[in-house]
Length: 304
Image (cartoon, rainbow, N blue to C red; front, side, top):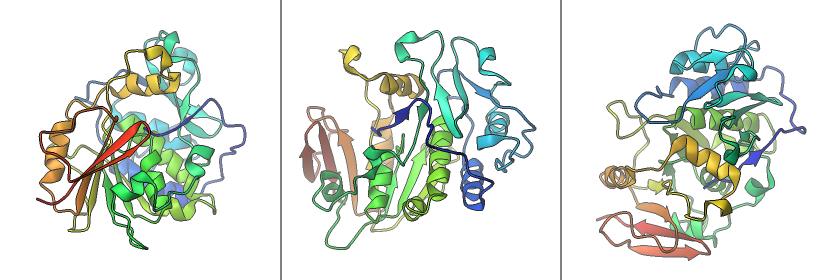
């Protein structure tokens, strides 16, 4: 899964109203979807100001578009984090970033917020052609395939692929994670050193298995990428608190096999599934090629 920073970001100063950021947030808002039916933990939004039009979250009185987001997703909105129920996550602005705070009733999840930040060192290392993810997704010479990441999560793999030159369509069905990603991409787009990478990522909200799936670019060259969320290890004390926080919010991808089967019915060049090294394959079919790297395995399936 993606690496993410926790805690405040004293180095980041929220930019003045920026058309690039506003365009990204507005586009992501229009493609997001309702939270009903996902079986998620409760979330309360902390935001002040007039929510206005949920499709225009660039209102300076509504940093991060959170008031509009709360309206769009039919979430409870409060003015102060002290008003958030103890069992709820809090989605709020922290040091100019959209941040997710763990429930006060869950001290095991820590107290620091989860913030996606593409300026962090973990995202800075460029993906090389020899790297396992690059080989699994079919990099050859200067060729970089278009990738559809059906499980964007916190964006690490999408960012790595885009940083290497791929055009990536990142799909995230969890609206809160989608909002965290949209904010991180908007901030990256406002930084000259990162803007070209952010521009290669198209973030979509929605569930391809629903009756209102997002419109995806599909061609014979498309690489379909899945990184399903798996149950936490039994020794949960070894799992970092931010990962436990994220897992508690989104749960397991219990429909990963169904998602993979859907992807296999689409046109494409290969289908890549990220797995723990000792995990069974995602379905009964054997992958055409298997790539291993440390604690990860990438199963690559070729066209039938």
